[in-house]
Image (cartoon, rainbow, N blue to C red; front, side, top):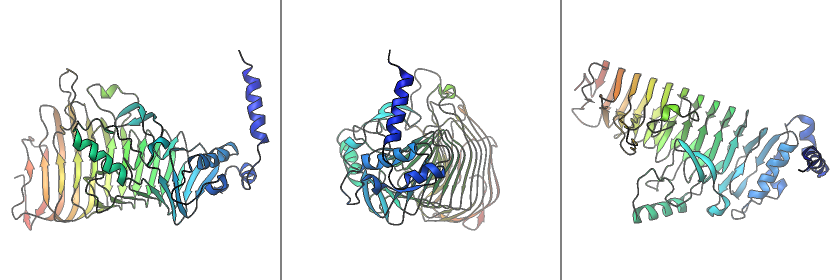
Length: 436
């Protein structure tokens, strides 16, 4: 057997003997406060050179010298998958673009969390951070997925041989822009997430995250950028999303967890709890806030003082027939709607994915969901039609709502909810409304 302690000493001596770039000596002395541009590692802002190794070298040298901030200066820097280290932050300056390579050889598959489980071999993100407590990703610059050729390829493959949606890559690798997992006290501020190949910002099993004044965008001229979720809050607690702008073609914000008939036993998927969304604008997307497609327990969620200007569903609670789910204490208030299309709520079975594995359908519950202080104009009220044999529904309240809807006699589509849905001061197209 080798002498492991001696090997460790030799590695430490070798690292200590490496020359430090200007600024790294100061990083060691200042306890990780240094700021080092990625150009110090040889990164080139020409929009074509793949700078993965150069940028990773800056990150690793900062980490080995006490921490600090890797700075992306103005220019277009192309990269493959990068791994942030504990104590190392990322800052994108004005005019900075950190762009995904579209040659997926630069995103070698690894074990990663995706869609409520772990895939042993799946495309990593552009920015990957695990166990990075206190992480800061900041600045007015751009994380750019360069998604258009990847989206085109995805639709080409899918249209040639349609398959169920639960096979998300279809043999077309697609990178998220950022995956932050198992980290606490995280701040993502000011950054524009643009043209992501897959999800934009995926938070997994984190606690204490603030996403502030960020933008999530796909081009207006692209009808459907697949799986372009803005923020996926996966098995996290204490998450705040504030002052953000969403213009995507999938869920703007999605609360996620596990899936399947045995989902409640999944120790890798704790409940999503204490989510606050405020002061955001939802310009484009499928849903402003969605729970699911894969989710088990989502509770204590508040969306307030937001504006919806796109054709989307304000709140969609996806009820999977094959998963025991609990959605409770979800409050939307102070919402201004401004679009001729869209629906306020959708609470119906979500049959896009179903795999009961030969077992009986599990029981779910939706409790204490309150929408209040909603004004403006929209397309339709929506529908509340869960499978009541499978879903316990209670405390669904609409209060102080005055909205002009797209049709002259708007229907509130409420199934046989047995008194679980109540309306208090709801005015649609100038007329008080009850269940209809």
